[in-house]
Length: 343
Ligand SMILES: CC(C)(COP(=O)(O)OP(=O)(O)OC[C@H]1O[C@@H](n2cnc3c(N)ncnc32)[C@H](O)[C@@H]1OP(=O)(O)O)[C@@H](O)C(=O)NCCC(=O)NCCS
Picture (cartoon, rainbow, N blue to C red):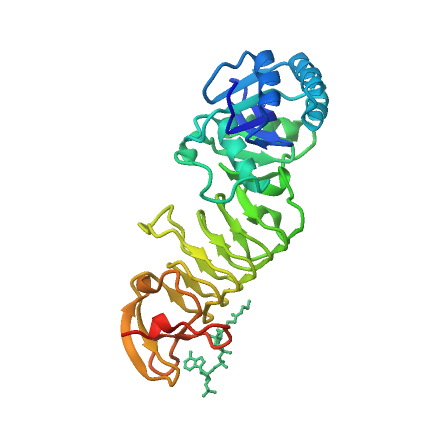
């Protein structure tokens, strides 16, 4: 057995046809030890490649014994608990980091992100939309959309109500993992696959998509689109927006540097460097024409915002007299950005 990319002992939900709807991995492993991988592989008859293997409760018990024998005590304890599961069990083995090909594989990768084992963009998620089914997330767990009407009727007949909290391909992260040191005011606003660094607060207006998140600490009252990563000490103001790349033709991957601020109702379609600010209400797109001002407020040149992608120590504002978008050096920054003023 060579080194694997990832491994997860999972408890999942299947529809009536036996198709996976979702999988919960209590302790996903990135680069598991060869000892643990070998012990598990022998029991589930894994040979190679990326595979999700349905296992029985007695398999889980055997895995627990085998893991204990090689000193993998945390995973052994988990396998032991899984042996009494009332839900289907799966062992997902990823030999390599490639496009997720099944629901258990996709969920393992989303768990790696939310458990902070990999950062956004550091695991391949290409094609994940096609792999994940649209699921009704209810107070009785995940339900296949096509099986929902029958369950709703059944609940009513029993004098109950089936609560459907959302219908989506991605569940809320907090039903799978709550990473240490975060505060989330409205849990439905953070999808599984979000990466929230320690010290991150997500207020009610905040939203974090999968494969996106914060290095931490951060105050997030705006939307972090898929693929966007926000550096330490940055603040997304109320209702602000970071432009995603999933639709609308945008192809620049947005990131926000350290100690930057996107004002309330503002937004960006370019990556920001460190210690940048965008005035409340101003949306910068890649093609926005921006007038560069020097320290005295004199005009230096006009450029497109995309030329300022990733540049640090900038303040963007819309001149309230002329309406034009201007950029000045962030005076509160420790270092002035001389590169900006070069003609
Ligand atoms: C853009 C912003 C960062 C500028 O703040 P600042 O650096 O403190 O600047 P000031 O407000 O002190 O203004 C400095 C000067 O620029 C002028 N100025 C500021 N914004 C301007 C604008 N849009 N157009 C023209 N002049 C402007 C001020 O009048 C002031 O002029 P003065 O030197 O003659 O007095 C701030 O207005 C802003 O939008 N912050 C975001 C806050 C926010 O939304 N937080 C999140 C909450 S949820």
